View 1: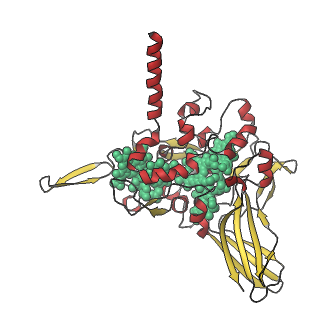
View 2: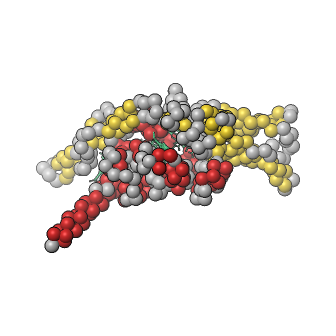
View 3: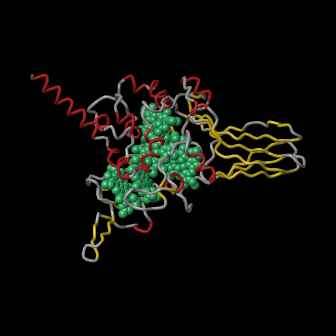
Length: 378
Ligand code: HEC
Ligand code: HEC
Ligand code: HEC
Ligand code: HEC
Ligand code: HEC
């Protein structure tokens, strides 16, 4: 009998953890954003969904100690792991919402630290921060007003939560910087740094990575567009972001230059596994002439050789393209009238050499992804 009760209690407990999936609530009223989020890397940032993160974690010295230090950025929704109450293990949070809606929408401020920054979440229950230029500075609570003696009612706000439109971090992207700013390894070496130069750019993390796309933001509110929530460089974002990389070709006496203008307010690409390339060919008389491929990367390592991020203590070479930089690449092939120069700019999520070492075979990580391409006819 007693064991039955324990069993039933356990059942209740497990069904409660299932029901506690935070995003399930949001799904009811924000179906379009919820669906986009399913394809985003923010819903797949755990070792159980991201083969690249898993491959690096499997070789990481912290794994042997059972200390999943990646949790604060990769799986903050798994509160038991975050609070040290349990070890990293497969569960529904890890599978479906490692960075839940609330983990982003409750960030009140970002505390700056040398090793890596820290998100400070609001403790106010059911209060979410958001951005809306027309409502900036206000706090919206749910209101239902009846007019003409109850003939009809108008609703404003959300029946489930309050919305705080006064947090600047949701307009300029500072709310992203708790996780995205920089990271040092145990040697005090900066493994990656987004090197943000916001300056006088009118674009921000939010306007570029959460651009307005068609579809309503909530099923109880008609709106023509909503902020896109499916960001992932593995699949969805290149199409939305290609316009921020401008390619041009300039002819000269000895050949030509290809110019790459990076309008992003950060380095391309900060993650040490990435390999960014420019591929150029010439179509002439029905034939294609392939020219040299130019690679851009920030290579880190020890003793002059590339190494895994936790061992690195120096930059071996850095040809990555910085915020607002225009990079010029020279070619010494003289162009002829009628030639078409085909320029492709893109990246490997994982540098093929590193993929081999890490045994990564996942196609979205090992195939060259074209971010933007252009044809120039001479
Ligand atoms: C301070 C926050 C933070 C911590 C802590 C952190 N990461 Fe990350 N990690 C990120 C961010 C942000 C990205 C995405 C960066 C980008 O794409 O430029 C990322 C990306 C990665 C990637 C590339 C994933 C891909 O799909 O290409 C790997 C691998 C990775 N992290 C491994 C780890 C491991 C292993 C740990 C723990 C030992 C860890 N990270 C700890 C923030 C963090
Ligand atoms: C019962 C329905 C309902 C639920 C459940 C719900 N929301 Fe909302 N939410 C709304 C409505 C309606 C609005 C639009 C309010 C307005 O603009 O007046 C809204 C607006 C928002 C906004 C701000 C939109 C803006 O204008 O910038 C955010 C952010 C948000 N919700 C996040 C969430 C998150 C996260 C969850 C889950 C934890 C959630 N919501 C659950 C109905 C809901
Ligand atoms: C709680 C931490 C956290 C916050 C907050 C956060 N991110 Fe991320 N983000 C990550 C991690 C971790 C990854 C990499 C996951 C992986 O590849 O496994 C990532 C990946 C990304 C990627 C895609 C890179 C890729 O590898 O596919 C983009 C773009 C991105 N984030 C943009 C943003 C923007 C814009 C914001 C702010 C609105 C933001 N993020 C807020 C943790 C965070
Ligand atoms: C002007 C537009 C623009 C702005 C502003 C911008 N980005 Fe990007 N971002 C890009 C482009 C273009 C890429 C490369 C294309 C891609 O990821 O597919 C990129 C790539 C990224 C990546 C993936 C890098 C990688 O190696 O995985 C992350 C993460 C990211 N941005 C985060 C941010 C954050 C955080 C901010 C705010 C500080 C920001 N971005 C501001 C345009 C922008
Ligand atoms: C990586 C951080 C991040 C995650 C994860 C995230 N959001 Fe957002 N969300 C934002 C930011 C930043 C904005 C403000 C963008 C804007 O309005 O321009 C936003 C805007 C919104 C809006 C208002 C849309 C509009 O166009 O005004 C709603 C509603 C919303 N989010 C709901 C959700 C729901 C539901 C989830 C989970 C399925 C979620 N968010 C996950 C960062 C995030």
